[in-house]
Image (cartoon, rainbow, N blue to C red):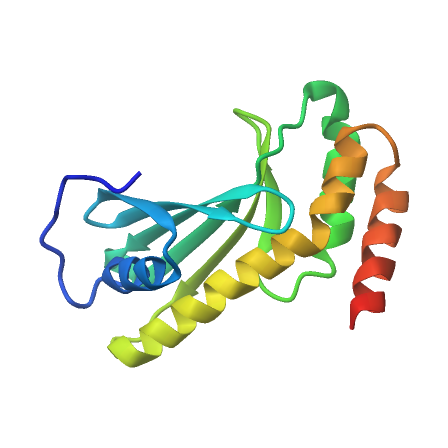
Length: 166
């Protein structure tokens, strides 16, 4: 997925830092534009697609972690209930369902300071948090999509399982 297209990017652009982190992790990635990087990560429950976007005019860095799940219209109502229950438990960021394709994702945005070392730390922590939160609740999402549990039951199981891991 590594692109053959190279962009000249300002040193203040955190997508440069993202590329360094992804290279160090040996994760497959592609620079989509001077302000956007996409990556694939093999995680605990599947392959997640990470999307990083730098909104320069506001100094805001966006991270989205797409799951390899798809929610149909039939499952959407119960899935939205699950999102509401789980988002109460998420430390930072939130889970959402993209209505155009039914793909659930974790999203987090943060304002980044101009210091490159601080940016690097914040980005690394944000990536780790995105993967941890997605792994933490992925089984609950699967249970609702499969119709095996209600949103309330799946949320209770996920919360009990994660409490048991602490």
